[in-house]
Image (cartoon, rainbow, N blue to C red; front, side):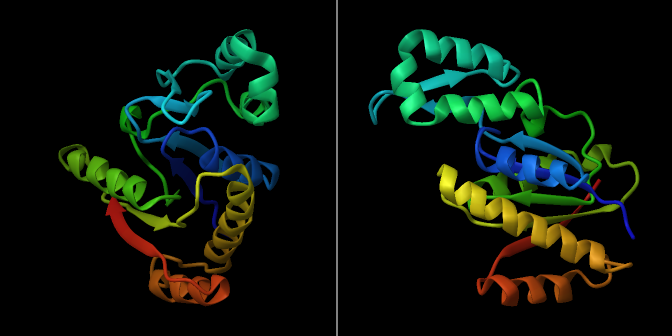
Length: 195
């Protein structure tokens, strides 16, 4: 059985990637999670207002900030629950573009624009490529809601198990993707990058 080094990536490293991180971690996978935005954005009290944080701001600090601002509001919309979950998984959200070396076998994104940002980031790093090893990039398009993130975490686990099924997933990548598309009854974006 192959040991995969996995990255799960959404926009702010808050909801979709963290739910998938939690699921894979529970199943003892080597997983990291990231965001691609310039900053972390959480819903505010109105559609036009957001809570904005720098990547690297501890989830604990966000909890304190939002609970101090309006405990009842951020409890009722489950943002504090999400942040409590996140702090049990890791200290703070991370931005994939800030990682020194991307040495992942499988990168799973949850939004087309995040998928594109990961590709751009890998291409910017091409001058620093050391091993010419492949990274398999797959996008599982997911609405950024807590309910959809939970469902997608299960799909993420299914996809990782499908990768593990193959001793040589590198040579069977397209077949593996076709099987997975059939399993979820949906076409997905995918690519092969190098690090």
